[in-house]
Length: 403
Image 1 (cartoon, rainbow, N blue to C red):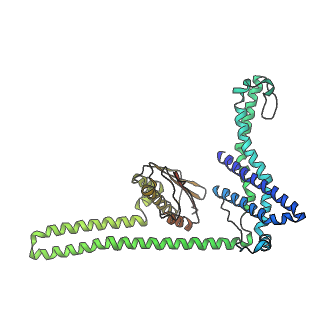
Image 2 (cartoon, rainbow, N blue to C red):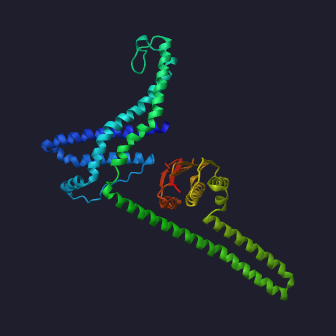
Image 3 (spheres, rainbow, N blue to C red):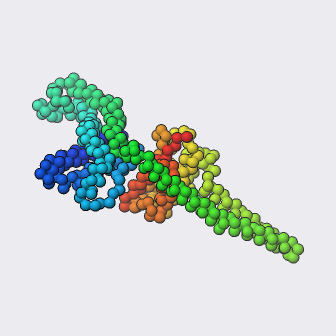
C-alpha cells in the first residue's frame, strides 16, 4: 500500500507539470493565430519533452525502464527545428501521453494523496471531534456529526477509505503509469533498432569486463603464483645440491621451499576465489554474503530474503558486486556501518548496498563503479547510485534472474 501511495504521489507531481505544459501549449496555439505563438512552439515542445523525461525517470524508479526515443538531429534554425520536431513520431506520442496524464494521471494522483488523509482523519475522528465548534464537526464528506454513535460511524468510514486504498491503490498506480509505459518509449517501428543498439553496447561492455578479468587473473598468476613456484624449484635445487656438499643445510633449504610452496598455494586459492568463490557454491548467495560481511573492515549487516533458485551467473555477479562495493566503502567511504539487502521480486534480483560514509561516489571516478556497471549491463540489469556529498551512499542493483 505504501509503495502504491508513493507511486501515485509521484505521478501527481508529474501530472501537475503535465497540466502546466497543456496550459502553455494551449496558450501558444491560441497565440499562433496572430503569429506570435509560432515562435513559442519549439520552446513548448522542449518543455513537453522535459516533463516526459521526468516521467520516464519516475517510471524507471519503479522498475519500468522507458528508453528516451528522441531522434538526434542537428539544429538548423527555427524552421529546421520545427520541421524535425513535427516529423518525429515521439512528439505526437508525447502529446497523447500529456493529454492522458494531465487528466487521468492527475486525478489518480489526487486520489492517491487524498485517500490516506481521509482515512487518517476519519479513523481518528472520535478522538478529537468534541474539540471542534459544533458547527464544524462533520465527516470528510461533509455530513454533520453531533453524537457519539455518529462519531464512531465516521471511524468506520475511515476504515472504508483505508480498504479502498489497500484494494485499489496498486491497480490505480499501474493505471496511472500505463500511458507512460505505452507512449513514452520508442515507437514499435524503431524499438528493435534501439534494443539492438543497447544490446550491442552492453555486450561490448561485457567483453571489456571479461578481458579485464582475464588480464587480472593473468597478472595474479604471473606476478604471484608463478614466481613463488619458481622460488620453490630453485630452493629444491639448492637442497638437492646440499645433499652432497653440505647435508647440514638441507633442512633449512627444504623449510624455505615448503614456506614458498605454501605461499604459492595461498595465492592460487586467492585467484580461484576471484573466479568463483567456493563459499558461493557451498553455501549459496546468502552464506557467501554473510561471509563477505564478516571479513569486511566496516561493520556490515546482511539481510537476505527468500531468493529461490538463481542462475550461477547471477549469483556470482551479485557476490562480486557486493564485494566491490564493500571494498569501496572500506577504502573510500569513511563509513562507520554498511548494509547489504538482497531480495527477489518475480524475475528480478534486487541488491541494495548502503553505507553512512562521506558520499560523493560517482561512476567513472576510479572507485570500481564502472566495473560494477559493466557487470550489471552484461545481464541487462539496471544500476542506480545515490551518493550526495556528506552521504549516505546507496547502490541499488536489479538483475534479471529468470532461469
